Image (cartoon, rainbow, N blue to C red; front, side, top):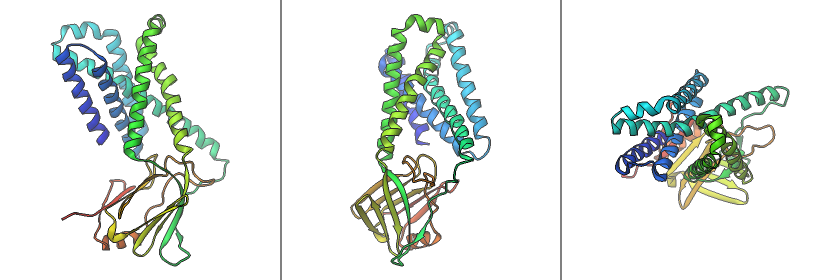
Length: 316
């Protein structure tokens, strides 16, 4: 939802910027490209969250966006000239936003294909299991051992946006420098090629940097406190002092966020390199944890699929 709102705001800003300046400058262009990426990111996440027909929706939206982009490149000139200025500007915004949205969805399709091939190879490999809760030797609750990367969702989003801006700028520069080759291959195909050539390595570098920051982590829920040990550092927060706790079990965004009592942690397991034989996800919280956290005055909310649980304290 946040990505959708952000994308629409950026595209609206680009629309009014073009109306005011009557020029496709670097600022409106970047607003369109980043806004298109935000919407593509939102659609991609939606298809992965769908239990059924997510792949078909992914393919359908990608085909529609690519077809729309091709049609605008080939036949959009006369159409734009015949339309009123606001409508023409809106079509330009949509056309430019389609570039990064379609590119991101194409990368997602490549990821799906790669994952499908990897699953076939893993059939003969040992089965990977989800980390499991274990009884704490002290007798105070239970714990789970996982590997995690300490980073903020905001920082991760900024890194991805920076990559999109960099790839977009570098791609535009290369398209200008390779004008003759672009004219022979075609603008749309050239943009897709640039996205693959520049975008995949950039995303690979980001994933590699994050995985290198993987650290062993032990999360324990006792009778009246949560204990999080990352490397050699241990943070302890009493249930009564928790301000917010987010627990997401699966996907690349699987993570623990804990805030309260001078502790502010954001730990991603979905981005970390998992332990041998384990998956990069978190197990569902035990029922006893829900009971004790709610008993400590925390309100609980769940996502529709139930894979995200948020405990928060209402400030009166």
